[in-house]
Image (cartoon, rainbow, N blue to C red; front, side, top):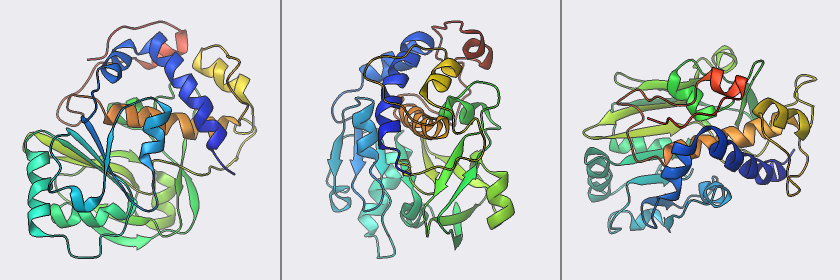
Length: 289
């Protein structure tokens, strides 16, 4: 099951939802300048494709260029193996980037990188099979990340085969968790993060560019019209049909990425945003923070 059509359609849905319910987010995204967001190329994740979908400019560099690259307040590090030695100067550069107020975002095998730079935060305990698990959003931040604020929402997260399952250590904050994952693999952590100096680091198991989901219920198998009704927006001619479960997976990762690009701290302070009641009632809100 590919999510390509779901991502393309979800990009258009995200734009509508942002205009109606989250104009503060849309304004911040429109103010992002070239160079603010830096994508570090990987092998297995392609965060840059999602940035293109929601029209966020970025610079793309290789990992070997991190030390010499100037600028950038958000570094999005795609999944790639970091079993090799990471130069001490590169680790220092990344630590200083975060300490000075930047945001480091890593996915899956890039756990090896964040663990080398910040060795007291994570511990890899296993690798997953190819699987899809239902996730829970118990915190205010996780609900903002996922952005699916309607009743009976059961978002899911894809675990690619050999995804790095991890435990968190002192000072790491759970963001998105999964009871199903904990039952299967002994730990619930999908996304988590920690502060360092003035900045923060956030890690996701598997990829932000999700490639499949799982149709478990009749509601999961419903089509585009059902999802649009839940999100309280209208269909446009350029939207292609997709299953609700596919649209939930695609939309939630696009919305998460938008928040990861925001110019304010995510872990250090609580934020006001669109409430659950705003979406469910169709009420428009101009508040973001």
